[in-house]
Amino acid sequence: MNKLYLFILLIAITSCQKPTKGIVSNDNASFFDLNLFENKIKIDSVALNDTENKLLIDFYKNYNYQTVWQSEEHRNFVLQEIGNAENEGLDPIDYWYNSIKKNESNYDDLTDEQLVNYDLLLTQSMQSYISHISKGKVNPLVVYDDYDLKEKIVDVNSILKDCIDKNDFSDIIEDCKPSHPMYKNLKESLRILKAYPKVKTENFDSKTPKLIPGKSYKAIVLLKRKINYWKDAVITDSLSNVYDKETVAGVKKFQKRHGLYPDGVVGAGTIEVLNFTREQRIKQVCANLERWRWYAKDFGSNYLLINIPDYSLVAIKDGDTMQKQRVVVGKKTRQTPVLESKISNINLNPNWTVPPTILAEDVFPDAIKDRNKFNKDKLKIYNWKKQEISPWQWKIEDANKYHYVQLPGRNSALGLMKINFKNKYSVYLHDTNHRDYFKFTYRALSSGCVRLEKPLEMAEYILNDEENWPLEKIQDTTNINHYIKLKKEKFNEQAKKDAARLAKNPLLVITPKKFVNPELKTIVLGIKDDIFVHQLYWTAWQNNGVLQFREDIYCRDSDLFAYLYY
Image 1: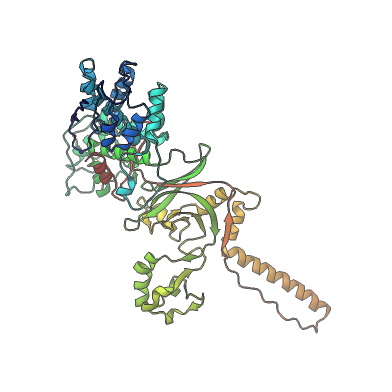
Image 2: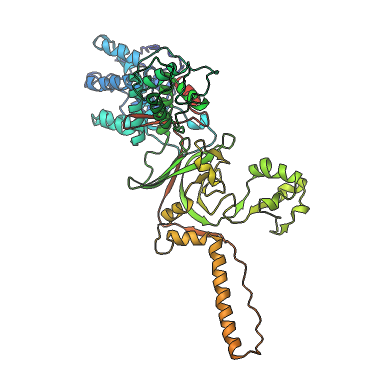
């Protein structure tokens, strides 16, 4: 008579995620027993199938429903790797580290039943770990609704099988992790932060005045302690209330690596950042490590990389940085989405079809008060027959029947250039009529698209066609004064011809030639290279051991960390 062992609960965990337990078969089971072969133990396939854990069932099916963790070397790797999961910003508890450690210390005394359960535990631990380091622990679609990256498909069982069969855990597992330098730098950031001493947190209060260099304040002593703690300076006179040059230099360094204007003046923004604790920064780094596990492992050989909270764009080709630009990104109420795509074309002198959100929130409310709003913004109103409608005929009750277009021009919303790429949010990169925004430190000011500081230089780089589209030609094509000059030259040339004809025949009647008024026309240009766009969000990194943090402009770090650890 078959004897089925009951499931044994190995561990209770706060996340309510529990490893599946197996059932060891006995000698009278209805399948061939290979217990004596390489110390493998047969697992009851019927009981395992009853668990409905498809990933686990499929894995053991590949091994004829036998235990696979006979190798002490393999087990020790698992123990060490998940024990160091904190280095990846993950929690060893999620991979049943304590239970595995306990089983391993008593391995020689485990019964067959316990060995089967331990085997299942090791497998599930590595299945979860491989999944998490390959594509992240948290599903970003659960956290965000403005996320458009390709889903990562990871064959966890195939990876784990390769580890076991090829006896190569170290290289294969390491290859699962993101290979981006940014990810590796973040891991180093985590190591650096954990090396900072744990101290009792003391923060500036809300009544702290703005601290001006050269003056004295009670809060300066605390400021010096903060700057000393974060190693932005070694301030010897730490008990003086004077905001001296030594402390100012440390504050400027602190401000610069936090993306603040480095003027040495400690206002509300700097105080807010100074109040961040070591523990908060560790959580921030862990959240950013998770994000990099979501992102594509290969960005391509030619791409634009935009860091939304850093308001920055870099163009990378074959590993070299070709361009750097400051950008303006979406405001908190119209956030720039995280996405990846490929550039399809460039528009010089783009016209702008106003999107519904901006119409409803910006254009219509003003137009109700003043129909001249359309003329001020140089907006044309068209019906479905593409017939232009006068602003004075426009009525709010019919507003959604029309579409609204702003004609090309330097002062149009899109400026002189637009870069198009397929995405479900209808966003793009473009020039702007608010060129003064780039001097600001805080640049979350757009309606969702990314605005470029040097749009025509970017157009030249992307077109990569020096013969047909050098920068000078792009500049001329987008400059109305260039066309005015051409018209004037044609006019003068015609005048000379007319004068010569009149000199020969003074009685000749010449009808003046009419020249079309110059205007900017939209030009759509394809590109010959495959250039990808990666609009990503990360708020922490490090350069040469110097920690860098940016304001979490969309308040995403704490939410993500909560999903990671609670």
